[in-house]
Image 1 (spheres, rainbow, N blue to C red):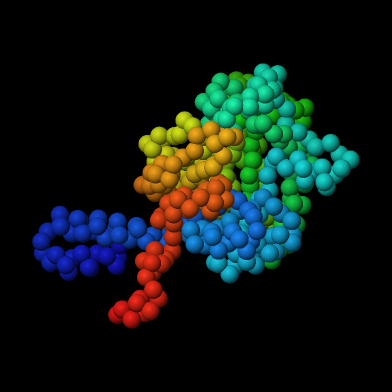
Image 2 (spheres, rainbow, N blue to C red):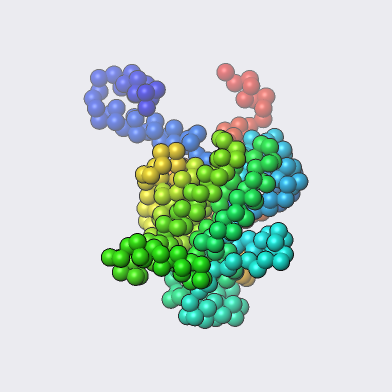
Length: 383
Ligand SMILES: [Zn+2]
């Protein structure tokens, strides 16, 4: 604003505050079009030599990968650096596979659900229709009882916390990695865990809060311990490597308080603004969520930045209806109008693999719009 005000005044002289306001609006819209604060982060993966140039051309500034193989991370960080892209390695609470690899003789401490939730799980697994009747896969549900299809580790078990700390240490041994990203940090039934360890800790919580009704106490216990787990691992990552960044995408949804992300002591907190599946969220809801995600990001931690997640899939046979490029453009516009300039997209590969979708993202996040279509010599010759 400091730079634009004198321009507006000198252009219009003494024509009055209305004209100045109009010019300021126009200038700020132009500035918005080249907004340097926009950051596009992609959850995805693939061969570094293939994805990095494509991602850079679209305007991705960050890639988050689930693959923590040290050799892979090393190569990805090196190749991404050539394209000015930062890399985060993700640890995820559904990573039962790595647990079994590390501790083949120790059964993984898994989250436990109620009988009703187990019945809902069976029904979802047996349903092979595309989209499974508007199943939301961990987003805000539209059916009666939804749960995640895959097993989840229970973070109330101390050994799960230790496991993730070691995984974080191993990833951070890769020099040049920008940070760690959390995924699937939540509950399989979107509310709580009913395993014996969780229930013992919950009983202790109830004794400390005798005045709380049990249902309310369970919500509070579940949220407080989930937040504490996030913050403990974030602190651990920073203690291992000072200056390292911690990112997350709040998922699966925590139904008692869906937008709890600003309680997390992370640097970049992704929260869902536009979920993947039909029925697609209204543009009003997307704009509102984007506003909350951005405007309330620093409520508890001044260094935290909010990021709006947009979900995109290109597998109609599995997930049902796909968003059209026009729909995706409208969702991105709603997110930016809501005031959120940091955007996470999952999956990045769904963007890179579809030329039209890639073009939409490039129109919002591409870095060289003006020069791309003009031969270099022309630009250089032009004073
Ligand atoms: Zn548990």
